[in-house]
Image 1 (cartoon, helix red, strand yellow):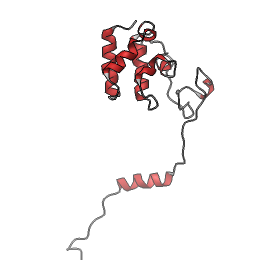
Image 2 (tube, helix red, strand yellow):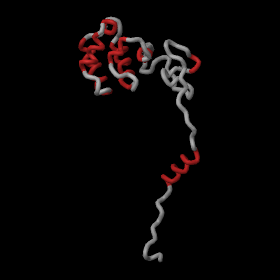
Image 3 (spheres, one colour):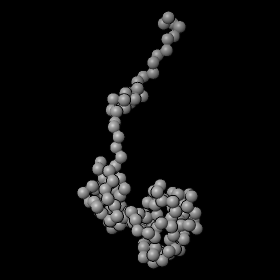
Image 4 (cartoon, helix red, strand yellow):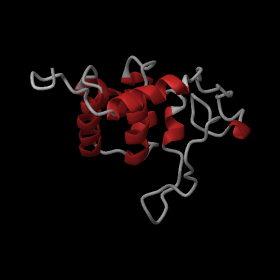
Length: 144
């Protein structure tokens, strides 16, 4: 159950992530009975943080709908600060939900390949070398 005090703290934090979302909008989204009566503060904060950082989410009122943002809060608290199923992202993890390619389809997500483009290694290495090269000496009057 989400209390008004907890919702206020969450709204203040999310407003810093997404200043366009007003405190009143965030409080209204969390005031929905599907949220305040059925979700924990940790789950609500995690889902709203996901939504605030998602450019496809225009308003926090979307919180009451099912979506990927609830998968953010879906892990169980471990003894330490790291979720028990934590693993670093791999090169072929889903661009939308972050889960492994082999875990799909899962929930409402079908696999979306991460964007990739050609990498010009030689140009990249040349730029790195140029940044470490000593500055060219300018001719002085004594050497002419």
